[in-house]
Length: 543
Ligand SMILES: [Zn+2]
Image (cartoon, rainbow, N blue to C red; front, side, top):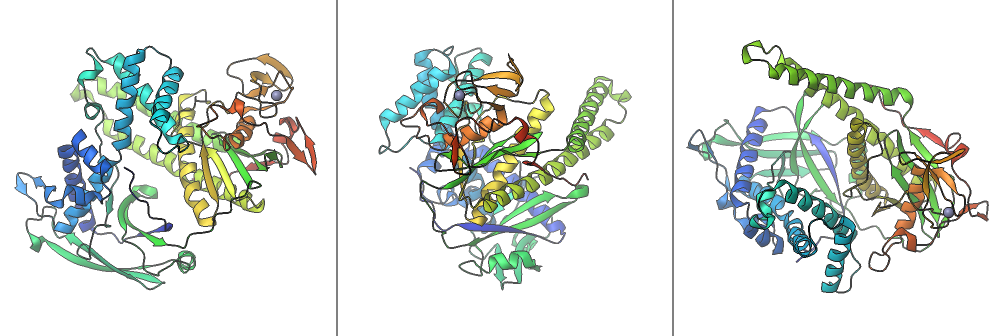
């Protein structure tokens, strides 16, 4: 039973808190308590209870369940802190409800069909089953299809790895959630763990924090008072909120440049619903995401393409910079491995290497983060410049065969695409743009101009087929272009797919190109247009 979603949109802003070791203690205590609760409740019974309930997670669990012992001593956590902890762990468990159900639905079909059956055959069978059970004739949600696909792959892997039948196990035997990021929700609190007041320019707040790493009683907790200034840029945005008072925040921890760890309060403000513009002539920006070509896109309206392709590319030096970091990481990994093989007494400097690795990953993350921010800002700007009302991207939860030849570029590109999708989501909300995510399957294999299946060829002037080639050629109509560009057009086509009636891109209308009011079936093909005036470069601060 889905829980009712609140319809008031919110925008959240984070504020850095001054350094305070009491925050560290608070983090350590609540994280441990949440993980212990998670371990204790990790069962299908609790997944079901939480999944079927409309109540807030902490109400289903009851904070009395939250207990914590350190060094065989009972730790005292105030009841509202326990509530927040229960809410935190409960949300994680609840998040597994759909996945668990999908696991058993897939398993049932896979046992019936045999585990060797092709993924696509299984997927069709399971979707058919879901449609038959038909939930009020609603269209088939895409995320479900993606989830099924992932689940089939997971079961196949498990089936292969296990010596005894997979049916001897439960879903909860295979999946064990672990808390990796600190994010303490204050939402269940009633002014006994946090109090705050925002006046538009600053937020005054009080937090209840422990005065020792191992609080034993209520006396080991105290109110800590502080004030955060709201930066002018955020002041302007928050001024448009329904109320100047934000909703209850979440406490986070983040690592800054140089490795410094800081705590943040993330406050959501409520805003009025923006009226959705919904006409079929909607102007749309469709984007394909990659790595070297961070984004390839075009503008569409009323089923027609109205712009030439636009690309955001990494310049060579930026790409090489990232490449070098990964080379360092690989070399460093190698050193750690070879040091570890030595006898304990002869291990030299493993810690130094590990420290170096940590630093390299941080550098990678910072670089990627900047790149994702710059890219999304450009994307939003293009959408606004063209008066688009919607942005269409591929759904990320979906598996997409890697394009990079080297494993580091594959991993980075996956990560980067994830960050871009995440940032786009909230930047679109800020600008009142709709963001639609579509299924990216086959988006670079069918011709967007005539719907025929195309081939991968070496280049526009070299139509030799090659499986790894980046160029697309349509034997039927002759359209030829870079595959990322093909993907962008097909992502637009995929935005019309109603998965209940249409099973693949083949059954959707082709997209002609329109230039100064004249329709062209096959231009632009990419080629020269892709490399000159439509090229944008995302600039990262090469830190
Ligand atoms: Zn064609």
